Each structure stands twice: as structure tokens, then as C-alpha cells.
Length: 127
Image (tube, rainbow, N blue to C red; front, top):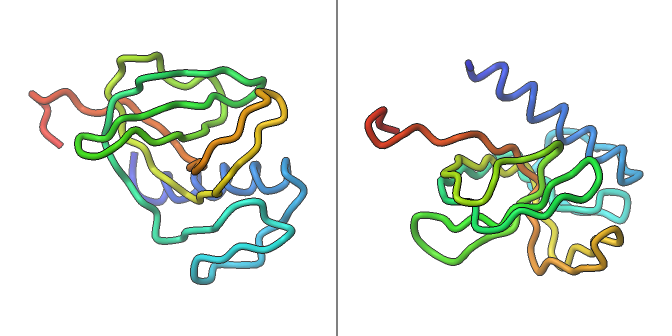
């Protein structure tokens, strides 16, 4: 996929999450958070590679615990099914929220990354 397709997908994902949560984007600015937007917008996008260690389905979303190649596991949420535990993935983070409460799961995530997740290339393919 090319960069334009990635950017469009990210914006559609972000808009979908915003409207599902009752907010609307104010426009591309520095990272920000307001009462109408339930997570911090991060237009610089963070990308990391790791392994899915836990997968929790919740309606149209899937919560994934991903252990990066270095550091502690991090929680990410994606639209759709998401990959199974044990899969090596590349996570593109479009925004984060601290102390995110999932009413559907009756669970609080200390930090949740609103993300897109793709299979990572195999080591023989390089990165």
C-alpha cells in the first residue's frame, strides 16, 4: 500500500472512532484533547512492531495487547476482528487515551492506543 492509502485509511478510522464516541475533529493541529474528543489526537503517528499477546473481542472492536520488540506490552484497539494472539504485527497509532473505560468490557485500560494493525513482514522479507 502506498502512503496516500495509509493516510486515507487512518483518517477514516479516526473519523469513525470520533463519530462513534460523539466527537468531531477540530482539524489537523498539534496533539490535543478536549471534552468532545475522547482521546489525544496525534497527527505525527507512532508506529511500532510487536507480538499480540492477548486479544479481546468487543462488538465491532478488538482490543489487543501487543508486546513491542523492546519494552512493556501496550493495549491497542482496532475496528474489526484483529489478528490472533501470537501474531507479529506492525501497529500504527493515530491517537491515545489515558484511563480509557470500556463499558462493554467493564474494564479500564491505563493507556489505550487507537490504531491500525497489519501483519509484520517475516524476518526473511526484512523491515
